[in-house]
Every structure is written in structure tokens, then in C-alpha cells.
Length: 233
Image 1 (tube, rainbow, N blue to C red):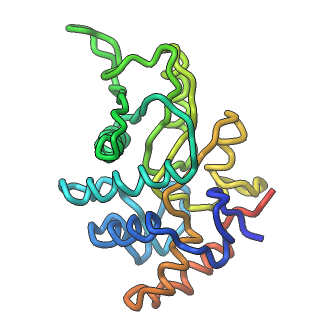
Image 2 (image 1 turned 90 degrees about the vertical axis):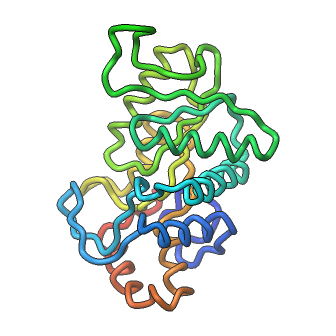
């Protein structure tokens, strides 16, 4: 059985909920989701590539924020505020907070600078204070988990506790040979925090089967999963 870190659906043929469909369709429209041959940092040749930075308009960010907010609501996580790790997490957390505000929940937001500021207010954190707060981290993907570990450290130093992590796309592939877990599962287990994804590779496979324009890529996606896909523990 293939691993599905969202724990919501069967990993082979998931029943796609509205937020998954909207997220993938919006990513395709914004060209945040592209198909072809892409060399990843790992050296793997992937038939698809996801870049959340391509959500670069008000409407696309609004759609993205709504999909994230719906995924968080479905997961039922309890949290007090959002944290967006620099850089891509900053607009993501902001968009999610706006979507939640439209639902009647005004959620505080914070984010970090890559380098601490030595003048003015100083420090490397901007936004709402995190002391005593349950913080939900909002980011695009988890690859090696380095950025997430940094975010966890910042939240702990600021006196907050991590309530969970929400990402846009879970590639559901192993980080390294000899470890059958996905990067998302590895982070969740290492830090004992829930990790949820708006959509996963399993969802993308199903989406490609339902979209005539993407049908040509389904075999390549399936082959990639067969070679690098994470398996259930």
C-alpha cells in the first residue's frame, strides 16, 4: 500500500475533495504545476514540478488561500495563529489568514526574516507575538525538512508551541535510500507534530486521469511513484 500522509483517502485512487481539485486546477492555471523533465535538488528527474511562487496574482493567491484554509478545517487542527517561514511561507500564511477571516475567524500571523534586523525593532520575527500560542506553520512543500526545522526552532525560542504544519503539495517520495518514509512523514515523526497537505502525488495521479490535457503524463507520474514513492511504515 502506498503511503498517503493526508490519511484521508486510499492512496491509489483517492476520492478528491473540493479543496484538492481546486488547488491542483489553480496550480495548473498559474503554471505553478508544470510537466516535463525537471532535475530536482536530489538529482532525480521528475516528470512534474511545483513552484508556489507562480501564484503571483491576487485572484490566484485568494484561490490558494481558500484551498489551504479548507484543508486545515477538514483536518480539524486546533491552533491560535499562523506562521509563514521566509520566503514562500510569508504570502501563503497571509493568504490563508485572509481566507479564514472571510469565514469569520481573525487569525494572527507572524513570519521571519532570513537575516536578523539590527536596527529599528530588531530581531528576525515580524508580526503577532508567539509566546503562549499554538502555532500552525504554513509552507509550500517539505523536501529535506531544513526550513521546517528552522521554523520549529524560531517558534520554540519565541515561546510558542507548534500545533501542526500545513503544506500545499506532498510529493510522497522518499528522501533517501534506506528510509521508506516521505519527507512529510519523517518530519511529523521526528518532531511529533501533525503534517497535512492540501494535495498529494496520489491526488495528482487521480487528477491527471480525470483531465484529458494531463492524461499523457499519467504513466510518467506512476513510474516516478513506483521508483521513488514512499511506502506505509
